[in-house]
Length: 453
Image 1 (cartoon, rainbow, N blue to C red):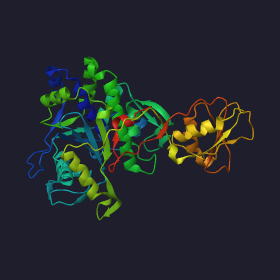
Image 2: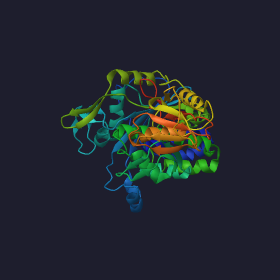
Image 3: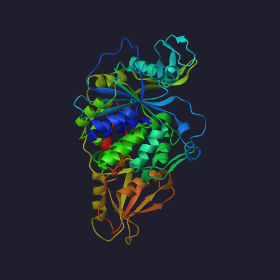
């Protein structure tokens, strides 16, 4: 999750502010050697592959902030977020693949960094590779699982994440449903929000807002990353030397990177990525074939789908996009897709043909109307009404969003078909869409598809 921060290093480099500035930033980065003595590595592909690892680091945060943002307990010095960021050879695309921390993995032979004992390869959850062998074993394990050669390693923690979000002025996210997680303290009503550092950390850490646990959390992390990229590219940060300096200092304060990721690499990347935007990025999670795969001595793990995951990593190796860009018109995000909502339209006025007009407008926007509008029992309504059974309240909110100014009215026992009583205030049907679950076999979401409309 804190890997969000390090992605901004890549984007910030697009300012191309010069060798002197980048050299000073280079000096701030703590170095690690994750590639030491590595042999039998995968063949290099096209483009650049960066392994982003999020670590704990809560000991750097004040007691007051730890209490406020539910960061209690001792730091685990572990990683619970691992992502591969592939930057295309033409520097026009970034493909981000999340690797679940509970993924079933088999480590290569290695020396335990705590006990000093040599271990043969054995099953673990992917995040345990860092605890046993640090960055080097993490890289080796990921390369072994994906056959993707890692070119650079970047590692960040809580502190970097919070500072980065604060220094850019917060990041805007939109949610169709309320999000509440008692573990992290997250409590967001449905709608548009600008999250500061601490609240943003709660958002990307939340695992208990729905039944999707870590997989749901990874989707929120990916959407947050897209929103952060949009904020950086639209706010002028990349073109303002002073803001650029402040953001990069915040980012690099807690970053560790391999020795090869230095000034020249950042400048080269920056020159090539000046036109980087949310539409240049795509996000997905490695396809899961089996949930709750029990492993003796390890516990419940996530087993990757061998066929789909191989196709995904082959696309990275061949420098191919994971999805096709689909231009999207302006549409409000709603909890339920219009295609799932059945609607009966009634004309609540004395205006002939109003019911047919409303029915046709809703149908053309995707709602499942009956195509048989009728006259309402009362023909003198002053305002369009969306009547609904309380069991279908999410569908009702979605329909009301498509009818600006409409009134929601609970009718117990109405059933799954919602009723629209058209009033004289009706002007149009607004386009709405459900939160995009992703496209293609990999469930890819592009950066320009997840912003606020």
